[in-house]
Length: 258
Image (cartoon, rainbow, N blue to C red; front, side, top):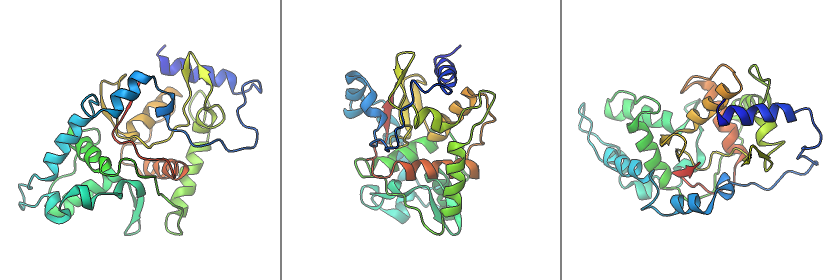
C-alpha cells in the first residue's frame, strides 16, 4: 500500500468518528500547505537556485519567445514582455472566455492555435508545464483573485458539488480530508487544506514538475474513483471552485511539495 493510499484509508476509518472532527462551525484561516513543510523544503522553494521547478520556468521563457514554425509568431509577438503583460494573469484563472470556462493551460493552447497556428500541447508535457510555470511565476506573491460572477456561477456550483460529493470505492469526498480534517495528522503526515496556490509544483515524490490536474487525478485514483480526463469541463469546474475557495492566498508558483 502506498503512502497516499494509507492516508486515504485512515481518513476513511476516521470519517465516522467524532473524535477527530475539526469543524466547530468556524471556518479555519486559509493556510497554504507551504506552512506544513519542513524548513528544508521551504528553503528549497524559496531559493530560486535550489528550486528545481525553476528549470521549467527557464524553458518556459524560451518557449515564450520562440516563433511558431507556422506563421513566425511567438507569445511575445502579441503579449510582449511577460514580466509586465502576464503580471496578475494567473490569479484569475480559471475564467470565462467567450462563454466557456478556461484554465490557464487551456488558454495557452487556445492562444497557440488561434494566434500561432500551432498544435495543442499535451497535458503534463514538458512544454505546457514550462509555459504554465513561466506565466504563473509572473504573478508570484499576488493573491488569488477568482470571484463568483453571473457568468461562472453554474460552473462554480458544479465544481463545488465535485468537491463535496463522495466518490470511488472508498466513498470519500475532497472535503472530508481537506476541510473536515485539515491540520490533523495521519501516518505522521499533516493533512493540508488542499489549496492550488503553488501549481504547477515540483513534487519530491514525483521527482518532476506536475500540474494541479495531475494531483487531482492522483487523489481520485487514491479513493478508487474514475478519474476526470485532463482538460475536461469537470476538471476546469473543480479547479475553479478550488481557486475560488483559496481566494486571497498568495501564489507561490512554481512551488515545491514533498
